Figure 1 (cartoon, one colour):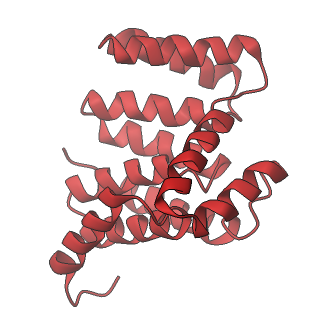
Figure 2 (figure 1 turned 135 degrees about the vertical axis):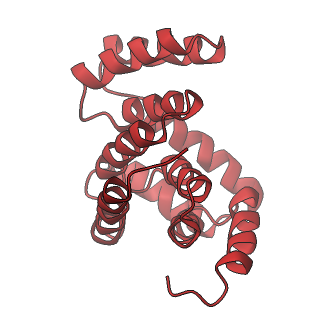
Length: 187
């Protein structure tokens, strides 16, 4: 998998600018979602799992029954391994509800599974512009960055996830691995 360095730079820069300006303010979130994020940052591991589930349910609500149905159909197609149908549903969702971060995040997941990292990165950028605290999307970004040869950027993304959701074991493992790989490189 290769990503054009110019596109990678644009996407990574947009991500870090979005996170650095939006993370502290979280203006795009309802007060209850912000309260859940605040609780997640200080929760025990057991509490964190419950809060993560609550956030996932909140982030899966578009505010429209029709859009929620498209999301569910896309997820069902993805689970069944029908990536073409999943892309169709998620593309319809992003076309009709471009302000719904989860639609972009889910389509990025399918693009990643189709070995289209550039398209996945573009969708993750849109998802994170709409919801800069979406730790799942940030993990997706980190995975793609790491797999495409940008370990320092991946490390920074994983650290961002850890600041939002400190109880992600896979993130702690990735940070440890990448700290050894990146070593003394400037990040």
